[in-house]
View 1 (cartoon, one colour):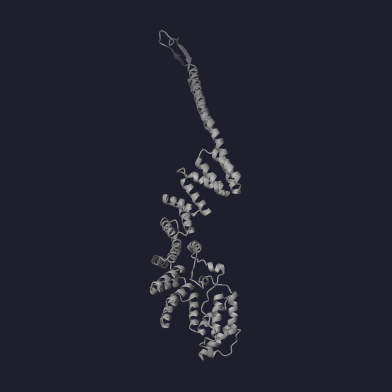
View 2: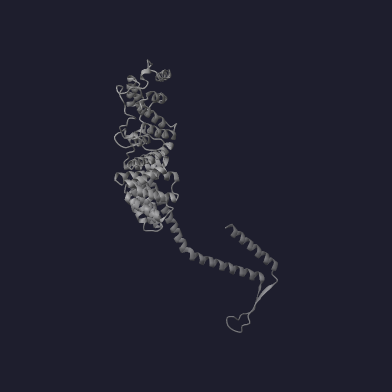
Length: 486
């Protein structure tokens, strides 16, 4: 506004200067050469000041008239714009109230305000989105589903409708519908990361292991999942699929998939254990042993030690000892390796060697039920029945080891259900951690070795034990070692 005032003042100043410069002496003569008609008039003389003033006044009148006509021309649009602005403000207020009501959980108010917003908003797509968001916020799944379904009719909101419907169906347990919407969206838009997550989760929840593997590979190719996470998830899915195939009698297909999983993720003990079992059934003992040794080097697990023993059950003692040395070397300092050596020593009636390795483990902290059972076995072989009973009593109340609980005393290790496999896909895929369903249930545990009675066992060092302080385990061990050297 200021610039227009300044421009007017400058114009008036320039006009005044022009009139002052001209003065009143010069005159403007206006005449006509017409002989008749309205163009004939007498010659007139006007001072230039009057002429300039009249011309200026005429221009100003024309400008004013043009502005007035322009105002009349724009008036309907301005009226409409004002009405539209007021309507838009009302729509925004209704949208805000609908979302707030949804967040508060007031379904009735959320529906009412969302309906008002849809009536005021000129865009049907925006109205549906607001209504769907408000319905979701207050848990009105029926209304949310209706609005997302309506979005499928518009190309602009098709993907939004597919996403909303897929997630709603997944949350309600309608896995087939969730898979349908998510797979369609993922095939139409390779950048839809939400479609990958929803599709994969629905397939895993529906125990479609093979389909989930395909989705996982596509998601990895499109960079919707980290490579390590994808590798771990794939190992779980492949093992679950191999387990399903083997239960159905499709042994060849199960073997191929299990071996692939074990080779790609040797640290995943369930895959290695299943592959070793299937290889053993088909005579591939050497390859099974190699898989276990490779896995033991990365992540020893008691189930792998049990599987390795099964491979050597028909070997001579010398050959078996040689194979076990290969396993020891793969990860010599790991706790499971030491425990495996202890069990083998006890199995060979070498109680002194077993106890020398076991003693540091049971005298530090709170020993597990597994360690207490091994200690009871060692004491039994050393003819220390009182201490053996004490260790067995402690074993009954001692904490269990999660990994050891994976071994079913009457069945196979890692005897997972479909729901267990589903959980494992995400837990192991994310952090590389196994789940332990038997541990969670407090199921019966396998004993580390078959406990032998003192009447049937003659300990190698029993004739050199002498009288020792049974209240001091470490002291008794030193006493045994000193007498053995003597």
